[in-house]
Image (tube, rainbow, N blue to C red):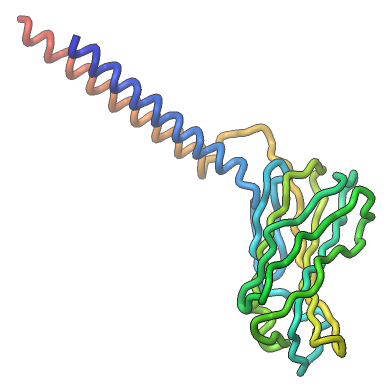
Length: 220
């Protein structure tokens, strides 16, 4: 009876480990953000929300010698159609510097056309931004789950003003949708997970055989 309990316990441990590893592989497959290159953009899986932190925005139309005091975020879509319909870009925040109040969401309407600018209104910066420090500003936001084709993209830029005399924007960064394929074993992730599972199963089997052999010796 005791041997049966131990065997059952070992089985439960293996099942639990398999479940955790499967979740880990699935989490990697459905990571949302797939890639990001500072100053350029990246790729995302539209089947799940994706959080990006954009850094190193290009100068764009920013004017040298101007100290900008307020900021807003510009967004537009482009690339492969069809357009997914109305959606919101959420959880927007700025750091280095931060802002005195939170950004509102950026709303894309049901009929927003390609390359039409959407924005969320100005908020005040905690310290001024100019062409000497703008590349250190970091923008974080979340793209929702979207039904789009590969190649559909979103573009983001920061719009700055010094109170109205100068109103300019950085260069845009682009993030492009790449729909997740049917899950396959990735040698860098799933392959290593399956190797670990195989190792655990081999260890359990080895221990089972040792117990069985010891039981035979004990009864001789």
